[in-house]
Image 1: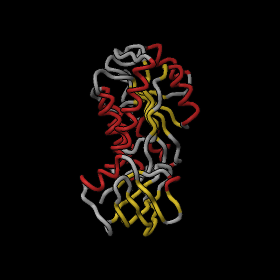
Image 2: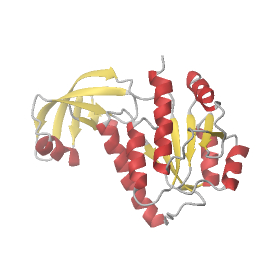
Image 3: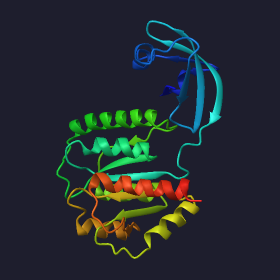
Image 4: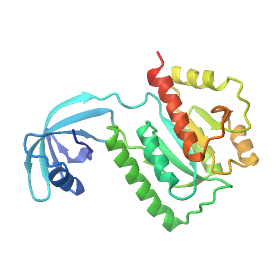
Length: 250
């Protein structure tokens, strides 16, 4: 079944009008017609709205609401991914897969060792593309919420934002001893339903001064195991671990 996102302002009573690029997708890609059903999310709540197609016009599709149900597909806590800017197009992969794994928001961080440097013009274009990737991934994975991709920030700004948004703040660090403390920390946060911010470094890792800045702000170093993970792997490994703790662990 096709799953799309719609603006709540386009919902009038039990009617919905779809315009824009989704019209072509419904008509010519999915080849849907009157009577077919579409799953709709608003991107702002955890509900699924089931609509039936009433009529397909030249530049819009008219739908009628059939029923609403609670989807319960979002993680019970908000996970903020503070991702240091990686090389090439790795950020696109990170955003796509993090969205599939349930991330709430992605904040690009211009850490000291980042090779990529975005000026304002390039950043605007990148953010638009990254946000579109998040939306597409949310549709594919039948999410109820589209993760927001923030503008790139400095490490100092990222630390301040994390303090504002999340009760538990962690930073995987290759020099952190794997002493068994990470699992109890994350499990306790999950049990308490604490929102979590995780900081992932660039290819060369965070500078020692950045680790000290994080620690001084209450961001706790953790271990993700005995192996060194690539920047495009570490955040996804953390999200997978959180899925296990939050949804699979009995």
